[in-house]
Image 1 (cartoon, rainbow, N blue to C red):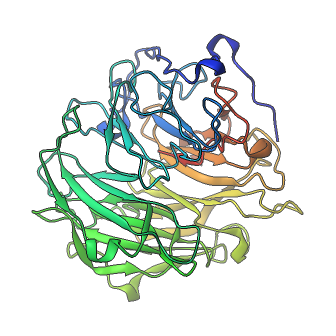
Image 2: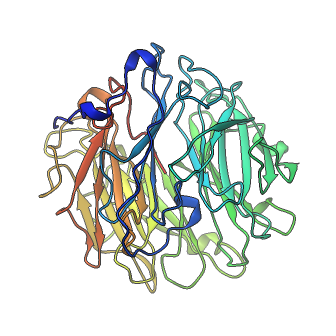
Image 3: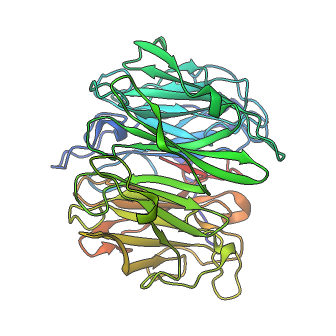
Amino acid sequence: MFSLPAYGLWAVPLAAGLLALGALPPTAEAAIPAPVRDDFDGDGYQDLAVGAPGATVGGLKDAGYVVVMYGGPHGLSADRRTIISRATAGIPGNPAKGEKFGIQLTKGDLDGDGRADLVVGHVSATRSAVVVWGAKGGPAGGTSLPASTTQAGDFDGDGKLDLALFRGGRSPGDDPLGTTGAVWTGPLTRAGKPAGTRELDPEELQYVDVWDGATGDVNADGRDELALKAYCGDGGDCTLFYAGSPTGLVPAAHGTFPGGGGGVAFGDFDGDGYQDLAVGNEPDSSVTVAAGSASGLAPRGSWHRYTQDTPGVPGAYEDVDIFGASLSAGDINGDGRDDLAVGVPGEEIGYDDGAGIVEILYGTETGLTGAGSQALTQDTAGVPGTAEPGDDFGSTVRLLDINGNGHADLAASAVGENSRAGAVWSLRGRATGVVTDAGFVFGARTVGAPYAKAAFGSELN
């Protein structure tokens, strides 16, 4: 628990709704160039997008908004950000009660101009997603897309980013509402027109609700694969897997993975040049990793399961901890192998149920290991705040090199913080792992946005 300061100079008049705020350019300093898919303003630093889907906008509960926090040589700061909602000038549509704008986010250079674009999803089965176009001062101006959620990747290997679009709701009951899927071949024009379109797996998707996912290249053929986090009915979640091909995405041999409901991430954990797939299984409080290879994902019998009972991983296994609720891969210590950040929002600390923890598992030449794992909470020395019941620290995690020094930095949210206003912690990555000496925490009040029950940090990208 802590108090987030409000910065009056940057405060947004609530009566006028949320407006997009321009970003100041960073101090020029040598940096490792950011991948285009993470750099909205083209300054060479990776940027972090934060969803606040529970926020009230224009008097409408759960309308939601997104904040883009800009990377720079000194990391994130409160005064370099852009706030985007349906009330922002140039963004199509109007705020809608219950839409949860920002509950799912995708980014990548969709129009090929050298800057990342941001696609903002929602929970409605009828409203459109919005792509907000990257620009020198940060994302500005938007175009509607016929989707609820999206995923970006080069699925056909032509060097241009494609976009998978999924339209459907989120079932409140046992039976999924069903999803329709399509792949738009890149590049997209700013009028929202793709180079081509094709339907995606209608036979399977009609029986599931797609919530989120991730993309990565498991066989190093230059074509991205797609893993989808989905609700498959009767209270059960699953992960659907599609392989890239010269003609785009196709259902892969592994098809539907058992379990799911947690995070999904691709990362090369053993440094062999093939990306591996990590899937969080919420009911089992575990993470399963399938290794990549020239022939695709390794056979199921070789997959590795990680829990808090894995040797070296702090804590002890409890199914209510939700180990793997969120996942993100990146190279924290700069050894050329990806590491895995694991959100454990249900972790009890002392007698504080749901205080939450983030675990870091490090990559080695043989893959992820529990040896040398880190555990971070609000009670860790140097981390702002105090662990309390229901904070859900680790609700969402994201690894990005926001200061361009070659080490991935950790962003972790606690959606339950301050009566579900939510907050995000930014902790630096160094050769020794995640460190706390330059920790920065921010929430909706910090950036001058509506904060009451905003669920700030429900999505990080």
